Length: 256
Ligand code: ADP
Ligand code: MG
Image (tube, rainbow, N blue to C red):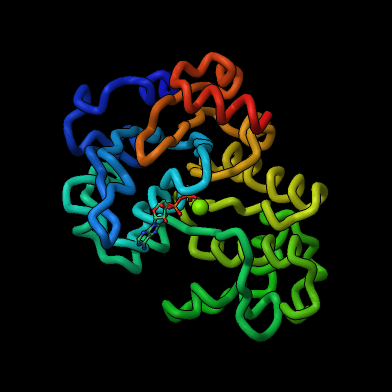
């Protein structure tokens, strides 16, 4: 099954294998002072799965996630999207295909609808009210929010507007860097529901960094454990207790 393929070694697959959304091969990054931040990551992310990424602070989770839409420039031939080296893609089209949400949403000035219309407008397309409404509903937000100003929203509501704004670009992949860690449990559940629906109904691939193991167990199909710049385990959520790496075991014990 596609999930089991994640567990296999990267060298079993030639470049250009279209069955994987992302294919990461020996991805490395050094800090300014030459210390390794990512130490040769190998990973397959099949289409249509929800991947959870967990690990201690400073283990490189955000750095890994930010390589996928080139918020930093990975070395060439290390990250492939649908078989294409992302370094050779136009960066703006890459970021339309691979949307991202951060811990705290930052909405633009103007109404919720203005925010949702932003991406398509850059490409000369004006979304109708009906299209905006549909995107809000996809992000688990009531359509009555359309004309509200971003400033009057709670963080949880603003995060869902940020999700709708990203969805307006029809992304194939969503990158989420601790998207609910500033949210209350209800808002967290709303975001999780929206992600699971998008995954189930549209086959959207989701890669989510979370510090919450419970959250990962609620929504992820596979979990990558990152320790010190290395993926030390790739497991199904119900196998987390079987992690073998000592740091991974310790991390799981302390955070469960
Ligand atoms: P995490 O998201 O798991 O907490 P990060 O990816 O943010 O970890 O950071 C991993 C390590 O890389 C940390 O030691 C951090 O200080 C370092 N780091 C992250 N970004 C940079 C950068 N742009 N320049 C130098 N060091 C960085
Ligand atoms: Mg981080």
